[in-house]
Length: 327
Image (cartoon, rainbow, N blue to C red; front, side, top):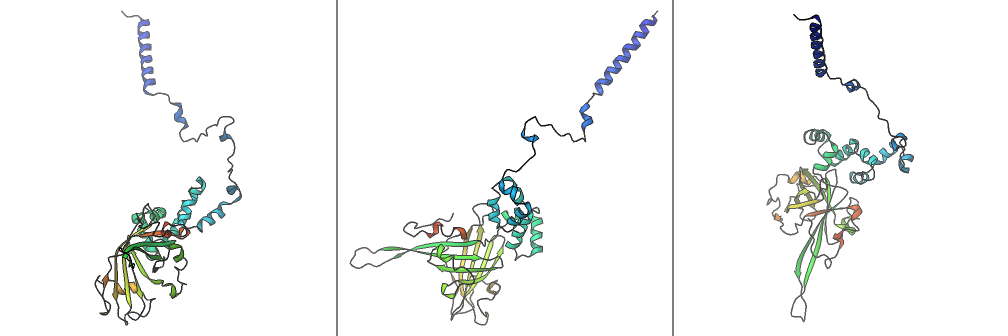
């Protein structure tokens, strides 16, 4: 017969076993009570975190953020890129999409505001800065220069062998965001031509103006050579860059000159590109001026910013640089 003490001890052991099982299943986690509560860590005594942050740069202490923003808004995109390398504050300030939106709308103003916004959302995830870096565009802060050389045999009297001359000439292009461009073919160096590549130049400088169009990375331009027999100069180029967003190279795909009737054009300021749109490469509208597709002088164009025209290697004479590789 079982005693009352044994029955009581068995019941206590069973309850204790159940308690241990419950404690194992429901573990106490006091840190769960801290969820949703922002606890500020305490910095060690004497550390820099205990002291209030004060920008030690004099320009940041004396220049308000509003004035700094105004200065950045007047900079060109390439100057903004250099300024972003100064410090962390300038880097994050320059990432403001307002700066890049203005630059993009100006660079692709021919497409219109609505079309640019559509391209922004569909191709560049709504980032103006990404659009500026990845979308092909023509630069207007300098000149595109094509350096061409050829060998011409000379004549020397009283000598057995004839001398050989290396002739060097340049093609210059300057594009404007409005859809107009300037062209000059000359043997003058870059530093001398940069002064006259504007719309205020005189006809003595032989600078001609025309119209261009940009479709993705393809550029098509045309201008009218005035004279007794008006000649249309047509050129097709492919835009590329040595780095992302550089757009500093243009491959010359074709160069064609052809004739045009006098009644088709009224002057050099007419939209000649719209007139020759759809013409074949060998098409001419004046039998006295046949269409000629030029196969020489098609060296790729290299972009030279205006602040580098004095120091560019393209100013070197042929005796120091007989051939130039654009890259």
